[in-house]
Image: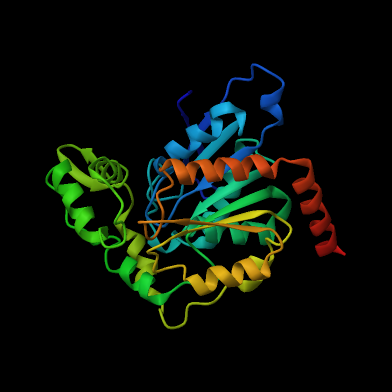
Length: 310
């Protein structure tokens, strides 16, 4: 399988943004007909989270290209000198800038946590951009208990002294939610959370992300049912970790009830947010992306889109 190429794009304010670009060589006629997939990570996560999924999607030409983005302040994107800019609206503008620069007119989107919120926002401003969506462990109602847990550690983790220390730190923080992970899983998770730089182990995100999170009133988090309704013309797959404290079973059931073409995947032994590295999860997402390109599903989506306009 081909590895990724790093692409760098300037945001409208000049900040340098990074994306991983995985693409199959076009050796037959089937590949150009396959969709592009765009992967959007969680709040303090990076494009590296989608490496396993990207390669699974490329296998057999289910997708011809997979782009995984680093938001500003994460991964290889520049840190923002003003932490107030770690904002959903600014990040959405960044996403659109990257996609325009990399010539993406439409795609199936995969969004983990914050990435799922971006999917809902993008559907409101650029509905033709999306041809399907995988929403990983997030919904229109975000549970305050889970937000409080996330606020308790983002930007506040002690600095590990070694990779083994990093693994122990993450296992102590998340083992109650991720009960099904083995030693190799925890090691991989540590290496997509920290990087070794000049003998230090530092997070792959700007700790200043806590700035906007600290200001959030957990008792007044708005619901996003209108934004979720903007996805009604698309096929969607909602993924939930069985131990999630962010996406409740009740909210997931209501999403299925309100959406005309909504599939569900429950990931046992994982919490917020499922890592999308196990074969069952990647296989289900690959099958969903493949189905988004079917003539029947495309015709159904087009019909729903026309109904929304009319």
